[in-house]
Length: 188
Image (cartoon, rainbow, N blue to C red; front, side, top):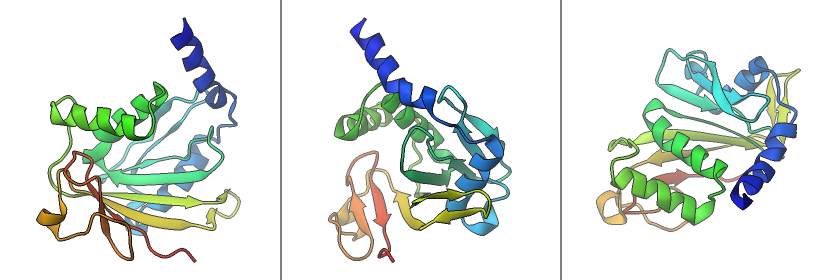
């Protein structure tokens, strides 16, 4: 009973959120992708219940995720389609109330034990944040784009990339299924 009530409370912001129409979610989300890949990217977005669903099928290898209308900050992402199972598991765990380190560890264990497919080759994730999206002018307000290159189980020794934030690329969560290279340019 307590878990059901907690899940309803967690879902309440999504249920009450003002969900933009699919065309607006698509337009905003593809801004995270390189321009030449935007038209062919598959797009996942939100319905009025807060559930993620396919808004547009794609014709290339990129999937984009629309901004979550239940969250005040603006964030969209596009990633290689081979990361979808990993990303979907992360969304599922978030819906169940798992966050931070616990969420990561469960997902990594799922990959380690073969329940979630994760490519062994490097795969890209583009993350675009900003103050919001102006649909009238089709622009992200104060955009900041960073890149994440998933390299499962990579280590500083296997890549030559340091595992601490600093200027330039760095390796986050080395040695895990979720190891990735962070590339965060200086903010304007």
